[in-house]
Image (cartoon, rainbow, N blue to C red; front, side, top):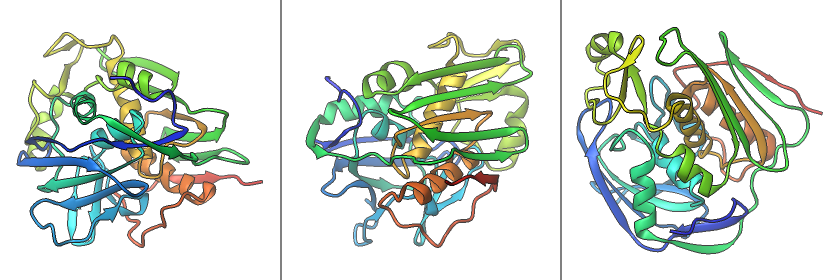
Length: 302
């Protein structure tokens, strides 16, 4: 598969492709059909209720950000969208229809790689030029506790992330790159989600990670991993970049330098909202702006 060289052109799928599996948190079976999109952006329809109108995804639909990004789409909720959206945006697909059966996107192997393989199976069609959201003026900085994300003007899309955990198997990790579709597919998409053995029982009791397993998530137990080998020495921080890309896909990957320190879905999606406001991205803001995490914001304008 030959991927686009950058994000300056609009691409959609050549055909339809389908994947099914269990959701990370619900543990329920779900099915997704990816189809060519005639309109800019990502549009969700429902395989189990096709009469409902398609809805374009945008940051104002974010309703929950604990351990995933969940959207409220009218009367329907759709959880754990970030890996699929990262695969679409990261590989260069700027418009597509996402038809879903269920309330959560399948986790598959815990990374974006199975979705990238599905996109390669469908193929890509080039549509024409696509202007990226361009950040002008002073940087945007958003904070929550010790964590922060920031975006500043840049000539290309430069991404960086840093994480810091007390568990020796992870510790401090930093990864940065100038993102292109090819680099996303090779260096970011295979990175799997990860969790911690000592948190499993509490999360299950809270009704979360019911679909989690050693086959679809890395599990850290202090100074070791329960299910090695890792795909990259720094796979956890690369997965944080994957999540960041998926959350930014709600507004469109920007022409900017973006950095996240101990990032979270709450901070990432808040940044997507701030970028939408400051860049004038096409999708209108929704009236539904509640989220599980509300970071403090410092948005400096010229």
